[in-house]
Image 1 (cartoon, rainbow, N blue to C red):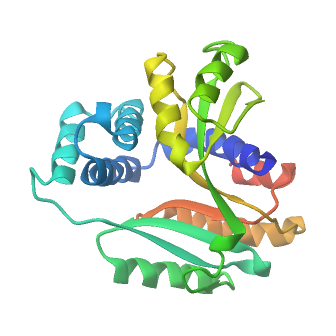
Image 2: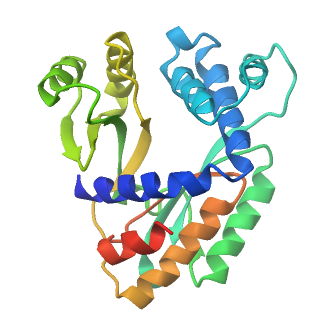
Length: 249
């Protein structure tokens, strides 16, 4: 899971800067709406919603905003209809990209994302063109000081987790998609609060590039992540320490 460990470090280092962007609340609002729409408005019965609400609280989103987002998701309040869409393609130097999007206008989103790929010498592909290069997993990160590794192992292993590893000062728990909810609930019942949790796509094969070549790929990643509709970007770029350092700024 070393590829995921690299991504984890990047996300933690970038978190402080990302939190300053005004779009953070907008993204979280949409996450809450989708979670409430799909699984109901009670966080105690909806793991996806519970995580989105916790994320909102960590970003200091007012309770009224959270409640409104839940009600929009359940249909109690009218709001825009958001769709979860994925786009696949190849970026510079043949690096595969899988982009997760949440949008109220798919025509706008696909046009914008196709333009970003074209600008950097990449090509947006068809559905399924690169999905087979990624494995979808649940990843939950717990601050290492929360409890002992053995105690955490007992909790998550009994709930169906696949892997537990210590990465710097964070425990990283990997689950199947099916076990993600049960493991999350088991942690909540034990009073363990995750630093982050979500479903990600881990590349099963990677593409190694020189620093200059990797820079072009990193630029496309940044442009995609800055787009208002993009929720997550996954690639097959092999991330060495130099690439991690570049992405962390």
